[in-house]
Length: 147
Image (cartoon, rainbow, N blue to C red):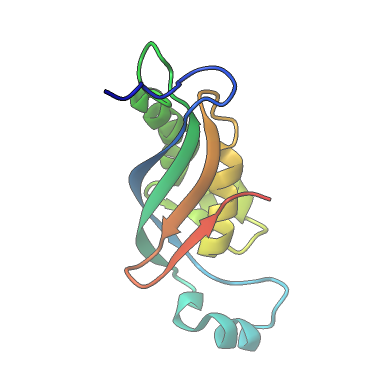
């Protein structure tokens, strides 16, 4: 018979929790710092003046000690509500360039989307934010784990 792992105090067992979310948003990749020709060369069809959309998949990873009373790192309902308030509600079915203040002056590449989402979720109180991963297409995903 083996002993149960420690779940509280110094040296406590640390577990990572990864949760997946989905949202749809449109954007145009265009930099005011570049000429029209440079924007077309750099961003190609993603520089379409009318924009284009993606069905994004967001993975959020948090970690912490297992609470001995609940057996959980974080309550999923609390994490879901936090992600919904900070990311899904402001981004889902939005034009990122026009409806999300952070992207009015920043090109809404998925790299920048990753950085913005990480900044918005950093304050989750129940566990430590480890990383965010944003899948733009089946071929492209971006991951950020903070500095």
